[in-house]
Image (tube, rainbow, N blue to C red):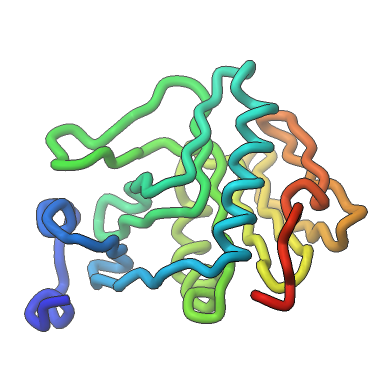
Length: 193
């Protein structure tokens, strides 16, 4: 990444223009560019399993599931991220005039935690995700053990629940679906995580 970009604060429009010309993905968090790192084999397997399970259950409910490089405009004042899996139910809104698709109204977001991103995912990103008006669920997915931390919205209140172990089933209230953790972690070697 060019030093001048790394050291300055960017607006969303500046970032989106710059990002559209980059060979690798970057995120903008609080107006600072963050280089994204590559994903591990367990991360990729979990991502694929999760997206497949969500697609199987939600496509009949008018929902779209995205799992590859879909950007989300989290905060128009300075945060743009690439969650691992994004679900949008209903009509999709994208930022007008942006050089790339910038989704503005996610329904569900999933972040697969890794040692290099966990602190940022749990803090700055989660805090801002929970402020997205359209969001009804945000999930932090461990890759070193079968564990999903669920933040789900009911009315205006957020609720936290952990789902742990391969016998557990992730329950997503809205849109209604249930996914066994054994399906999400199918063929994942925790020794590789």
